[in-house]
Length: 199
Image 1 (cartoon, one colour):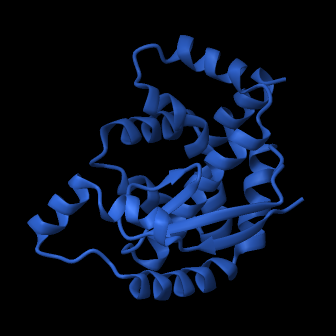
Image 2 (cartoon, one colour; image 1 turned 30 degrees about the vertical axis):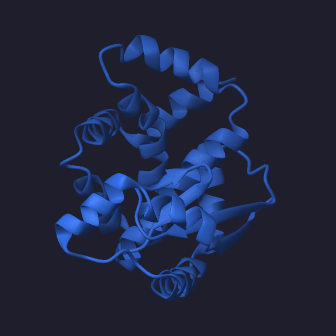
């Protein structure tokens, strides 16, 4: 089963970010205004059109490579004016360019399928806790994700885009470390380990 993807704007939800004290300070410091509903709605139309070009392939590749199944019939992708993207509810921010926004959506969709389809996720996590005892929780939680992400991006958009995704995280230490582990060990070996351990 491939889930339906719905992009959605919620004024109530967006106001949680709009009225956040840290967000207000950030926009004041940058001398910028928080995006309007109209700004975000236009952005949604652009991103939805862009994502739909490869939607079926992306969703199929995520499931095939991870060997995890989509269990929800619909995934809502909320778009707000400003936030760090996260997976549940899947939420992305206005303002990234099209290519990066699609990559962020793929990243969060992999988190989603992990939550939906990994019945034996605890086995994998226990393995990570022992093998990578000195690594942060954030690093450990992105090892399998990055392995899947790299192959998905390579298969859908090509090797150049997959490599650009690695470089994007150079200034984020925990994420960078996860990518270093993935590249050193290779994405295929990490996914193979995951499949054996979660059985």
